Length: 211
Image (cartoon, rainbow, N blue to C red):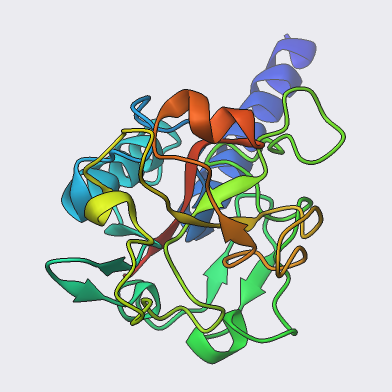
């Protein structure tokens, strides 16, 4: 009888710990994308994907937004749509205190802390398959591009081969103009799922809780 009570107490404690982690989580990297390359259904579809994954991890009580910029029909800065912070990953680590901290060298982003909604690490450079190219469409400071070129696969509604999206490296390593940048490493080769996978991506993106 005593052994049964102890086991039940341990199980209850584990569930309580998991729920505590879930309730504190306010940042994650999607474990999977919608599956159609950079066509995320626009910002609304990307936000809904964040919300769905958060709900699957027990954190659906918060409002989630995708870290994505657009520079086509409507200009949107990723940094302006993710709330004020602070943000905590599923592993309990605070990755940034606020928006400025997030876009500074002081943030705690990287393969160890840019984990999925369930707290699992995402494959990076050297893993098979490599999935470290993360869709952002953003400059280093989290703003949209203003050069007239498409950096967001037609505002995240296109999965053809002739487009491009700016990606970051969640593991902070690799190639490109800014190989150690989490949000602005290089442009993608195309917008389709196979294009993204061919250069080390998988249509993944960052999600932040705004409340």
